[in-house]
Image (tube, rainbow, N blue to C red):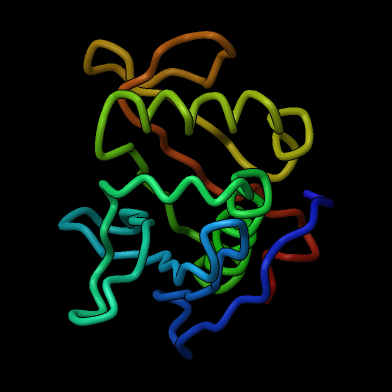
Length: 154
C-alpha cells in the first residue's frame, strides 16, 4: 500500500512493532504483536494502544486521533515485514468487539484491490473460512502472503 504511514520500531524477531499515532489527542503509543498459536505457522495479530505502565496492549480503548488511515497503513506494513521473515505464516486477526471487526473488514474492503495480489485473504463466517468477499460481516480474518518465485528463495 502506498499510503502515508508511521515510522516503525521492531524487535529483531519482528514479533513486536511499535509506533506513535500523532493527532489532535497528542502522541499515542501503539503496539502490533504477532503471537504463535498452538497450530503450526498460525500467528495471532494483536493491535492497540500501548499501556505505558505494563507495556501491554489495550485493544479496547478508542483513541480517535483522526489518523485511522495512517494507522491502518502502518499495521499493514507490519504484516508485510512479518511475512517477509516468516514466509509460511498465516495471520489470524479479529477485533476485540464486533464494531472493531467491522472496522477491520471495512479497511480490508477499502484496500482490497491494492493487497489482493500480495495476500490470500479469508473471512470466517458461520465457523467456515471462505475467500474474502466485500460487504460480508466476518467474525475474523486470515491472511497469508503470496510469495513470488524470486521471494521463495529468501
